[in-house]
Image (cartoon, rainbow, N blue to C red; front, top):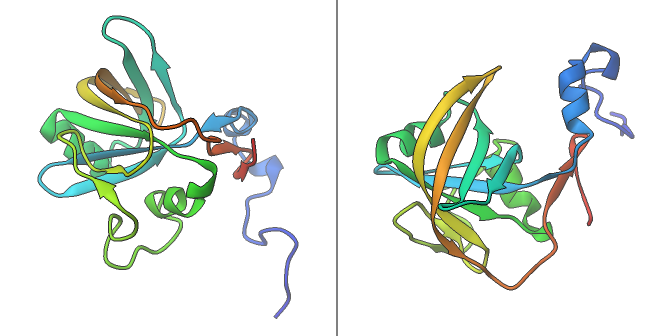
Length: 167
C-alpha cells in the first residue's frame, strides 16, 4: 500500500468539463439547506446567492433528485444556514462524502424551525419556496426570505477548486 500526495482516483484536469473547471475557480460560500416534510432532509449547497429586495431572496442550484428538493417542494419552505470554517465535516456529511451513522442530523445540536432544522449558533434564513427551473444539470431554486437570524460573525467556510480553503 502506498500513500499518494493526491487523489489517485480523481479525474485528470484535461478530462474535466471546462464549465466545471471555470466554476471551480470561483470561491463559493458553503451553506446547508434543510427542509422537513415530514422527515428532515438536508444538502450542502455552494452554488447560491442572496438577492436584496423587498422581499429579499435566495437562489441556489441543487440536484432535482435530492431528498432536499422533495421535502422543500412538498412543504413549500426551506432553511439556509451559513457554514463556518470549523463546519467542514458537517458540510461533507450533508454532501454525501462522509458517513452519517444514525442519520444526517444525529451529530451536533440542532434548532427546530418551521423551515427546517438549523445548526445552533449559526446565521440562517427561513425561505418560502417561490419556484424552480431546470438549468443545465441542476435545478435553480428560488426562495423568498421570510426570517433571518444572524449569529456573531465568523469566518465562512469557502470552497474553491475542489477543496475548502481558509479565509
